Length: 339
Ligand code: ADE
Ligand code: ZN
Image 1 (cartoon, helix red, strand yellow):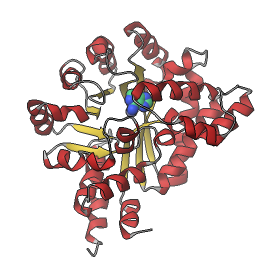
Image 2 (cartoon, rainbow, N blue to C red):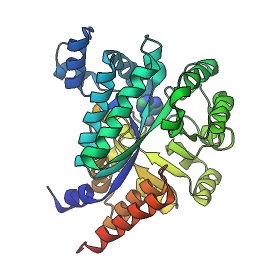
Image 3 (cartoon, rainbow, N blue to C red):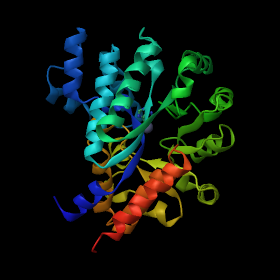
Image 4 (tube, protein in one colour):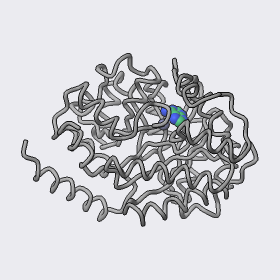
C-alpha cells in the first residue's frame, strides 16, 4: 500500500451517498438466491461481473433492480447492510447515511417492515461492532408516480423517527424533481431532511428544481451544475453539499475517463463536494477506492483530500456537537502528518 492509500484509509470520513441495494456483491447475490430459492439469470459470479458494463444510468438500473429481487427476508437486509458496514469500517468510514429503495421491494410483495427492521438491526450492530454511527435515507423511485411515493411515505409512518431523510433516485431524465414537490413537502412536515439525485444525467434545471421546488438539504451528484455558472455561485454561496461519486460517474459514462473527473474543479469553485461510492458492488469500488481514484487521477493534495472528508461531516445529518467532534478528529489526524 502506498503512503497515499494509508493516508486515505486512516482519514476519518462519512459516506453520504450509498444505495444499500447497490452494495449487493455477486457472491451475496448467489447466496441469497440459493437460500431463498430465487432464480437468477447468471451461471457464475464471473458472468455477473461481465454483465456490469453500462452505457448509461438506465442500463445499470435494469440490472440493479433485477439483482434486488434476491432480497426477501429481514435477515437478507440485515446481512446486506452488515457486509457494507464491515467493509466501510475498513475504509475509515465512521458515519454512514445509507439510502434504500423500499418501492423496489414493496412492489414485489416484501413488506416495508421486513426491509426496515433488517436495516435497523444492522445499524445497531454496526454501532457496537465498529463504533460507526449510521442512519437511513428513504428514496422514492422517480420513474414511479407521485401517488406511489405518497404510499411509500405512508408505509414508513411507524418508523419515521428512525429515518433521517427522504431521497429521490432512479431514472432521472424525464422525471424532474418538481413531480415530487408535494410529497417532499409532506416529508419535511414530518421533520425529515431532504436530498435528491439531480444533475447526474439530468440538466442543470433539475438541480434548480431540487433547490427551489423540493428545498433539499443536499444534492446527490450535481455534476451537470457545472454547466451553469449562476447555479454554481448559488450552490457555493449556500454551502450546499454535493455527494459526488467518481467511480459511478465513470461506470455510467457521466465522464469519459477518470482523468476527466471535475472533483478538483468543483473544490476550486468553492463547492462543498464529498466523495462517495453510490453502488459499490456495481461500480468497482467502496469509498476509499473512490478517494484513491480521484486522488491519483487528479493529483489531489492531502489538504484537498482532507477537505473532501471534512465536507462529508459538515454535510452530514448529525447533531452540531457530533460534527464538531469529527472535524476535530480530522484536525488531529492532519496535525500528525509529516508531509
Ligand atoms: N439508484 C441507485 N444508484 C443510482 C444512481 N446513481 N442514480 C440514480 N438512481 C440510482
Ligand atoms: Zn445514487
